[in-house]
Length: 311
Image 1 (cartoon, rainbow, N blue to C red):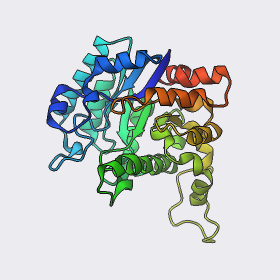
Image 2: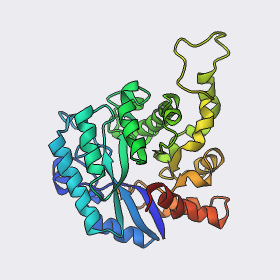
Image 3: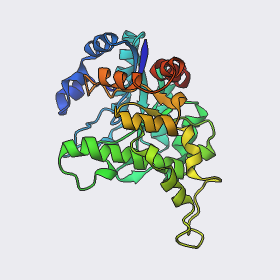
């Protein structure tokens, strides 16, 4: 059986309040659909907490109160308790939310049923190389809690896109690319050697960028030292094997590139279902088509996730 590290579910109040796919409210349907294709357990969370992934006028996902987030996480923990064989959950965190917010997130994480954190790759236009994210990454490292890096409702990389479909499939994909790269360039993997970062959207286009990242670290065409040196002791490309990537963008070309850059031991089955109900079979088919041995294939299906999330 397989483990899906990338799914989302929403409580009835959110379904009623915000425009969103109905599949997000059908937990039993999700479990049944996934069992039919061999997925036994799904790691679920929300990249917007109790907010909305569709931009809604007057709704600021980063203005949610701690009480609102506590109610959401209590509901999420209740779903895990109801379906212990099929669900684990992630705690939503705003890395720039401040001491009180981080303390509440830590309390939620240690309360049971949660196996990591989910954060946005950009927060109101601000990427996570910002030193103000240090307290969050220190907390995650201290708890040995994996961090899922997921695009926000309104990604910085989607600026100028007005069509929601473009935002979903282009802006968010690019935000993962830039946002995860910023985490590497910001030195978090260097400062916290035990930190586990999971890139959704199959890592975006990161597998195409090792050489470009190294040109940021050392730009010979400028012929002088950078004004602000990066907090790294070696080229950024050397940290990429520390990342984990899911398979939620089931491009055969992309998966093969990820196999070469990250390795089979860092790829995690992830479908982004819900909301993308029906993506399970294409994702599984793409994994099964990878030119790897059966042991590596089983690791992608479940072993890597079991190791990362201590399932």
